[in-house]
Each structure stands twice: as structure tokens, then as C-alpha cells.
Image (tube, rainbow, N blue to C red):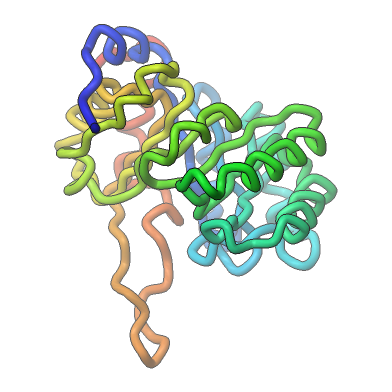
Length: 263
């Protein structure tokens, strides 16, 4: 049954260690200032996601050929000491093992990524053996690296044994502020969990950070940007995601959790 973690394990252990994950910006040609912002010295970034083919909203991977703009952007991030993860679309278990591994090879060959971010990762127990197989292969390719599973909710607990981090919340602030954490997460340190929250008002940033710390998540991303309406039948309307641009209060977040800054 879900429950809230006590402050003795969440508030004290994560106060100095909370950091930011950027789950995928728009192409560097569309958001050059945002990509440049990630290289600012002192920004408490745990990792950022690179998704090239067809944009972030589709969950696709490295594309068909090296993209010079992405090569330049990721090179600058590496020089700044920022961990870059290649996005792989697990399609809730529907993607073939060979397709995922082929995408991973391209990310490594072209962009020298530091790890992988499995978007749309399945959550059920029956899918765990295949996910473990994929993760073991990715670790072998990387010689280590950092592996993140984006479930968006609490999966079967066994997933926590195979990945470095699990995204156990991905959704709107209206849900997050009343959310609860699965009981089994208390067996793991905060560094194993990440929360991604869109539609978070500037005036609720401190509250959002308290929720993350209370629930034991050491990696967060809060944005005031909101999820766009669904595609219209005629194909018109917004096509982006709330993660494709940095929040309007990016400096506020950085100052709240950066070195030497208290709440």
C-alpha cells in the first residue's frame, strides 16, 4: 500500500543531494539558449537526455545519421562535465531487443553518451526479465554507464535492482502534490528515484521540493510548462511536450538546490 516516507529518511538525507534531471529538450536548432544554459558552471545537473530522431514527443532514439547540431551540443555538455543519456523507446515492452541495442550502438558511436534513458518502460513483473536482459547488454556496451528507467509510476519492485534510477512519477503538479510513494521504495536510497513534474506554479516550488524529499527522490525536474492538448484529427495544434524547453523559473530552481543555497 502507498504511504509517505517519514521526514527522518527523506528530508535530512536529500537536503544537500537533490539535483536536476532534464528529460529531453527540443532539437538544439529550436532551443539553442536552453542547451547552452545546461553548460553553466555550478548548475546541479544529475543528467540530461538526448533524443534526436523525430523529437522528444515520440520517444524515438538517435535518428538515421549523426546530427551535427546534436554533436556540437553534446560535446559542449561533456566538456562541462554534464552526463548525457541517450533516449531509447521501450514502447512499454513492445520494442524488439535488437532494435533497442541497435539504437544504443548508434548513440555510442555518434554521440559518446554516458548512459541510457528508457522511455515508456513497462512496469509489470512479467516484463522484468526482458528489461533486465536489455539493461545487462547496455551495461556491457557502456562498460558501466548510467541507466534510467522512465516508468512514470511505481513499477514492480524488482526493477530497482537492475537500473541506477527509476522515474517513479511523471505527470502534472495537480497529481503530484497529493501523490503517495510505494512502501517498497523505503528499502532504497533517494538516489535511486527521480520525479518529473509539469505544470508546477512558481509559487509552489518549495512545496514541490518538500514532496520530493518527503517521498525520497533525489533527482527532480519541475516546470511551469504544461502538457499540450491532444493532436487534432486534422493534424494541427501543438505537438510539443512540457519538457522540450526549460521552465520559466529555471534560475529559481537552480538557486534553490545549488551549492550553499538553503530553502
